[in-house]
Image (cartoon, rainbow, N blue to C red; front, side, top):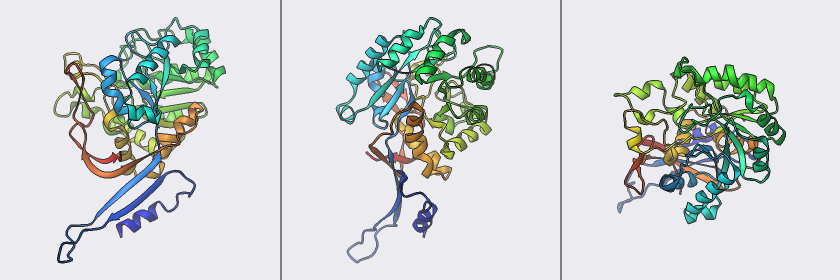
Length: 390
């Protein structure tokens, strides 16, 4: 009966929609007396076009080698953040970084064609001609705007956004996306209000000044962000992380201060988390997947002044599947993970597919790095409902 009800639930999905959901009953084995040996099991599987991750921190060196396989096993393309030390500010630097990423890919992933999409770190000194040439040469996919000192390695970020108008003009002409870390850095603004104030003071005026500029408000965390993007959907989008769909600001202090739940933008109140979940479950084209997976060693997280960032790469797609399942919206998952992002960036969806199965498993704990340090995975040691079928 359960299988029949579930099939009816998705009976209205158009037959030409690429999302595939099916439920299959596994036959119970019989013992030598012909008696059913164990209770029946019902499994769900979903098959979707292979997703892309539109916001990834891979770092460099031995950290890159440790974390890259976790992103590449799930995603066909990934937008790589440029906030290294020093930051990726030129096309030559981006091309070199892309080469390092491709050189370290595991063979099986390289054969499948994982593609890192490189970004330009915008500074007060960035020249419009350099951005244009990097884009036309196929090196830069987008420009990343960090307000100075807003997050990890953003000290060289923009201090005068209005002064970057000539860069925005050429990007608007090219159809080149601007990716924004949407927080003000004024110390007088409460950290939990900085995204909403950014939207009011920076994003809204920029949207009016450059109506045709493609803007992505990255890692949206508030209902304010969801409402703004929906109201300006023509050339505005938002990425939404997996961890912001699971935690609110209270979770940071559960059982004491938990540095592994500290990220920027910081998690907000529960009503904002619910707004994010409703946005992804809507399938609305202006929202798409961006994990903002951000690895830091345990030593730099568990210290007097810990780094901001949550490492979700080992469990990212499984977490999103769990959210869509909990929201009763599995039929909308492919739009969010695999279709909306490419459409906004002017790319084709991937031709290959991935399959996830609803079967309980335990999230990995620590990811080791060659120098003996490790990175703690989000949800480490906890039971998850879905897993990627290799």
